[in-house]
Length: 468
Image (cartoon, rainbow, N blue to C red):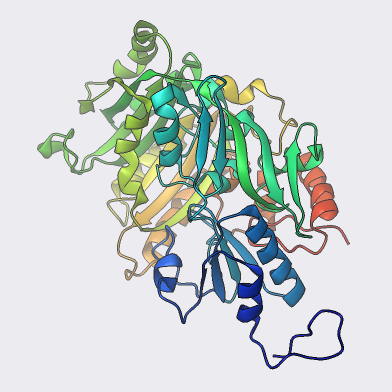
């Protein structure tokens, strides 16, 4: 390949594009010819085996900008990896240039103000480690390994959501690299339309390199897991109690097979149960009263709920950080019939994998205090979060039976919900992207996309296409 040097009509000796990239970027660059490439291209999904042209392990916003310029000018596809949890498998892409944030994890917390500057490669666990010693916390992912980049730009539903809102509700500003290579600050006062869009609209509009968050004061919480026998009455009771509870209580529940965990009696292992992960922030006695309706639903299989540092809740989801394969469908719902609950219970009982489950969450609380149009996350006033998760650990297994299980359950219940959380969306087509961003939200996102990325350089995401 001949590369023109500057404005001169003379040409350099044959030069590979990677050589030009190395001249522009001071950060490590991995290719198939360098050590560490195979390790760097691994992501959360064990079935992804993409071979990018180059993985740039960026260390500065300037190197992100230089990589963006390189990809735009030479016509390379451009992908972004924060935590590598993308359900659409957009973190690693064949033949693309990948902006890899694994070396940009710096977190600076001001204990007095509770303001934190967080680089895009930091994980949910990293934020806990930095914030917890100061009695501070942020709504982050359900699993410690979830990266803050994708989590935030998608919205951010986590363990503190009913008390302290979505991750984006605590975002003050962001440093963003645009498609033309500029580095800008997006906030309510600078590039406000961009700031609106990156709060829920995904990676369509630029690459966020650093976030500035307002952390919440969170010391000890009432946290742990309540495991109940899974019956229609118990599931219905959970749904009612989770949404009527004081906003200090956030729960994430799973209809699942009881795992061989230390807190599960051995003779109950494998039984279909409802596991309810809980986080209460506030007065301990009030928390006990808030939890009482759930504890009264049935004789528990296990109950580990007690005072703990907030970060301890991640012990219960550490296993989800392991590479695995999954087939997922998600929706929001405002009502769930007895028939739908029965279908979910029967599906888990006959699942093709002992690890497959149904994820239920009661929403409300702080989530719907902001108007639906305040950010690009448009589903604030929905009552329930429902996800069908076919999950298996051996990537060499035939995926078809597990995918068929997910689709079968989804087909039986999807009529009772609408909308989708973009961070739980696989590659499901434009109609589902419109479900994530309904009506006026989608049209407004198109306007921002057209203004900031008219050539659709940032397309490896749940893509909003520019006009024209």
